[in-house]
Image 1: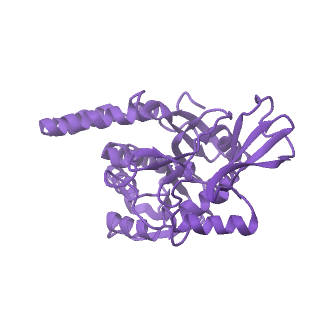
Image 2: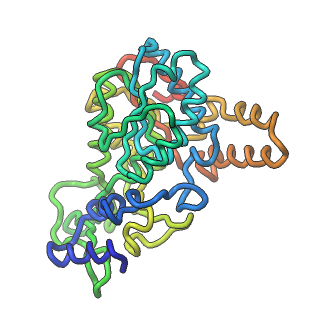
Length: 356
């Protein structure tokens, strides 16, 4: 058992089993041993590769979308260009480069990144320098004003709770100790109320108050100051049962409880729940649509062709492979969804024309 595992085991001995949400929060965000606070997990040398690291085309498409939304907002002289969980800063750097095609967009953008990892902040500063950047620990800390926000694989890492249906109701799955090892246990007391109506016996439901709270806060920023946000992540369109909690290490799956703080922990998004949280704050929802549909509608295939015109034979193959990874049905194209949240009364943004 590693240092964080021993720390959590001691907490369980003293106070009883942890919720999965508390376990995730510690494993990902502990100030000393947390996964995101202690390392750079991205890229071939890390544990996983996100869409911005697959190809510059992804961030460029996002940048052009944001530039279009800035123009639709009336091209304000200053606006908050925010990214939630910006990784290495790759997406934002590519977005700014592409957005420069629209005069005035980059000059009007005040960069705000919601990031808690000191390791990643240093990498982001190098990627975006010499542009000034303001970092925030929370969405709620973003300043008021017009905002365009991007959240690519941000919500999936926010903590979830799990419940399992038994004969007498829903029981929360917890992290306890068995034979001195971290193990999933079931709370013997049933949780009051209905978690998911009509679910079969032994079904597992995942609920995340952290995700709905973050979505509500982001939507309040948009409805107060005007603007829009793109949510890009993997998940399901409608609330459903299923155990989607997973751990990723060295580009492969590993046991969720094996080495807390040494593997990424995520769970699929419930886009229906996210949309409901945004609507409660007055947000206008577009989508979700598949990542493939969104990127194809915005012309990623044309962008790939243009890049290939000046590429070597090896580069041409790499561009084709990246395009397939981003849009292929057997890759990220269908698993990942894209949803837009906008201030009320605006027309459908690009990529969502038939998805309101």
